[in-house]
Amino acid sequence: MKDILPEVLAELQKYKLTFCFLFRFFDGTDYYRYTDLDVPVYYADDSTSLNKFEVRDFKFTRIGYSMSNIVDDCQVEIENRDSIMTAIFSTSDDFQGENGKIWLCLLNDVGQVIGTIVMFSGLLDSFVLTEENIEISLVTLFYNWDKSVGHRQPGRCRYPVFGGTQCKYSGSATTCDRRYTTCLSYNNDQNFGGFRWLADLQNKEFQWGPGGEIHIL
Image (cartoon, rainbow, N blue to C red):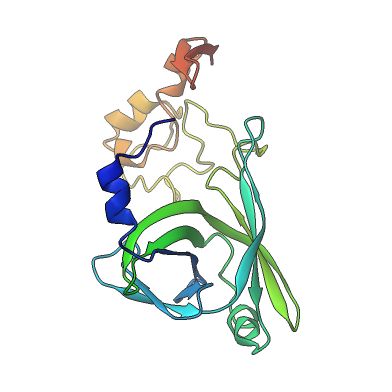
């Protein structure tokens, strides 16, 4: 462990420092900002202007990180005795997938933010609402990383109708073999519905990941 220089420690001891948490979420229309401190906190969260974080009791019931599971998650429990959370979440249909963020905040002796650490940043997934509190579940951007899908990425055009609303071809040709070269000859390549480079990547070796592992597609 690296020791703190005596002169640095002496400067820190001159000030009364306070820690608190900040929580911000977006419901699809508005941002809501709260602090667990007993006075409001003003902080420029992802912006150049100061924003007010209102006083409201909240706590983390769980923040989960895992090396084996890429989907990290967090549970935030917010006080709801005045039914403010009820008004927000009962009237919003678009909150799922919107962003939520938690900071650990350091204040100086006059209440100014002098440092923050992002504790968790993710997307609103679900909530459980009662008369006394609301528990919000946050997940990371990689929540659907391992999701199975039926849609494939073919090298040829996948649009079912030649000259339809997706294809948008309006020339004189009457047939198409769904190849990119054909689409290019029709001067319609900007609307090509396939993934022309994927076939070239098949069975190729790629190196990625923290350990630099070799993977074959």
